[in-house]
Length: 174
Image (spheres, helix red, strand yellow):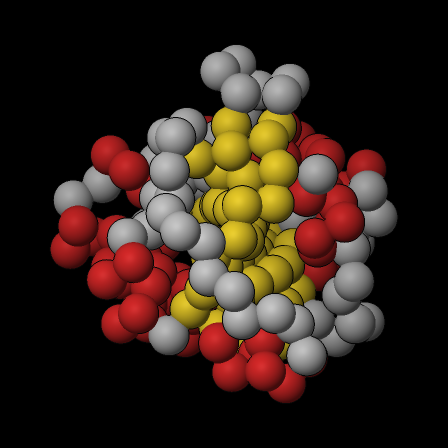
């Protein structure tokens, strides 16, 4: 599912994964053609980030929090960012933390960039109020049935990017 959403990177663009966990998404991205040397995986759990470094030596793995995404990318000379893939549990985070993470994500995304988010909730994990405040649209793009439990996959795009690319500005009703 995510391969079709993230595989169109230009040679100088980067992909960022938020919440690398045990590396399932990292592995899938690499298996679908994403160059490991163009990836940054952010994982705040020190033991998991150490494991990810050993499992994916060509990937830039950062032990840190998504609330400081800009700083982490700058210190690793990573950018421009075209796609962010997130497995962060947005629905269980406090609203203030969720807002900061989303603001950081859209601050680093390039003009035609997008955030692909896995979510276990039945509706969009980002409220309409937050989407309007950030100037982003949400679109449900599929379900990851192999996840247990299955995860809904959402794509978030800046409204200006949709106008520039001619994409529909239809916003999901969630």
